[in-house]
Length: 158
Image (cartoon, rainbow, N blue to C red; front, side):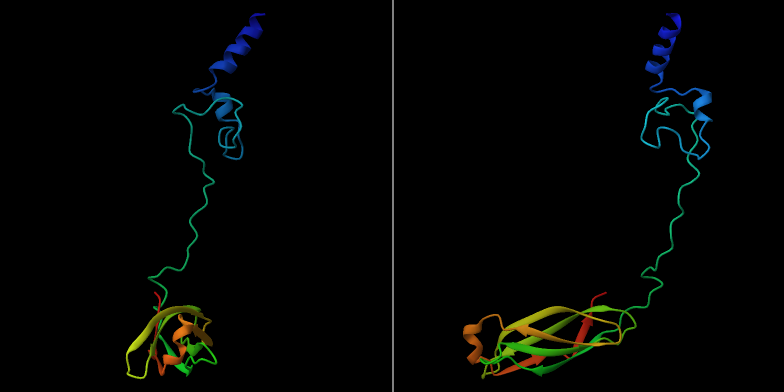
């Protein structure tokens, strides 16, 4: 009966303290608390050592080492019309990696006033060209469009 009382007392007091035998029993560097189970306490004593198996940070490309993206070019292929309510633009990526470019297009009427001014983001693969179609926002005004203007500089989003 005395043995049972000591065993019950030992398990109840294990929270917040650790015996020397349980802190030195792990061969992998992890104790019971680290693995999510509770078999001998929570490791609150000052004799607990930090795990030595922490992974080292992996080097990754940073913005300091990566070359800045060059702007691309944009060329108007066709303007929106009542027959085809899309302006078609070709965007060229001069970079050796995929990039996202902002392409600006203005839809103008016969008097030269800008009816709609857009700025769309377009993803273009490395050293490639993408054809992008821009929808005319208001199809009721398609007959008023006289010309489309595309900024020839497609700005690389950095």
